[in-house]
Length: 365
Image: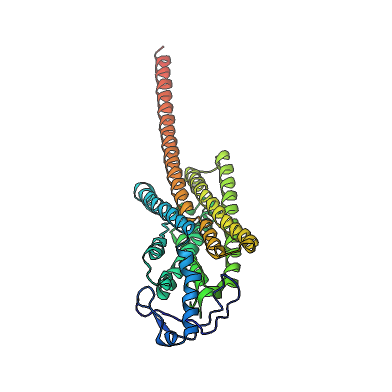
C-alpha cells in the first residue's frame, strides 16, 4: 500500500471538534503501508509540523488509545469471531448458505497498540477506501437480497397453481436486480469522491457523503419495513389457504412451502429492521447529546459511543441462531407432516383391508 497519499493544510480550518473535513489537503505526504513521516515541507515549516502532529494526536492517537474505545473494539472483535464461527457451522450443517459478515476491526485495534508515530493509527487511504465501499456493498446486498426473496415469494403465492412447474427465472431476475441496486447505491454515494479525510475505521463514512448517506439510511429503513410487512402478509395469506385446503396436491404442497419460506424470511427481516432501527436511533440520540461532552476526553468518548452502538456482529450472531432454529423447526415439521401422511395412508389401507374382510365374510354367509 505504498501508494497511499494523505496531506494536511498549513492553516487548520476545521472549527468543529470531531470534524476533520476542514483540513484541506494541499501538502502531499506519502505513507508506506500504515502512515509515515511528514514531507520535508512540513518538517521545515514549524507551524505546519505542529498542526500535523496535533491533528494526529487529537483525532487519531487519543481516540485509538482511549481505554473504553479499546474495550468495545475487543468486545466486538470477540463477538464477530463467535458469530463467524457459528454462522459457518450453520452454513455447513444446515443451510449451506448464509450472510457472513466479515469484521476487520481487529486490524485498527492492532494499530493502536503498535503505532510508533501518532499518525500511524489512521488506516491507509487505499485500504480504507476499498473496505469502506466493500462493507457498504455487503450491507446493501444483505438488505436487497431479502427484498428479492420477498418478490420471489410473492410470485409463488400469486401463481400458486403453476409456480411449481416454472423455471427459476423470477428468482434469477430478482437476485440480479438486487445486486445491481446494491452496486448503484455505492456509485450514488462515492462517485467522484476522493476519500481525503483520515479515518480510524472502515465503518466510518467520509464526511463528504454524510448528506447522501442519511438519505440512504432512510431509504434502507423504508425498504426493510416494506419487506417485513410484505412477508407477514404473505404468511397470513398462505396460512388461510392451507386451512381451507382447496386445490390439488401440487397446490397444497406449494402453499406449505410458501408458509415455511415466508415465516423464515419474516424472522430474518424483523431482526434486520431491529438492527437498522436501533443503530439509527442510537446515532440520533448521540447527535442530540454529544454537545454535552466537554473536556479533553470529549472526542474519544463520542467516538467510543459511536462504536458501542454498532451492533452488527451481535445481530449476525443472533441471525445465525435464528437460521439454525428455523431450519431445525422446519425440518421437524416436514418430518412430522410426512409421518402423518404415511400414518394416514397406512390407517386408510388397514381400514380398507378390514372392510374387504368384512365383505368377504358377509358374502360367504
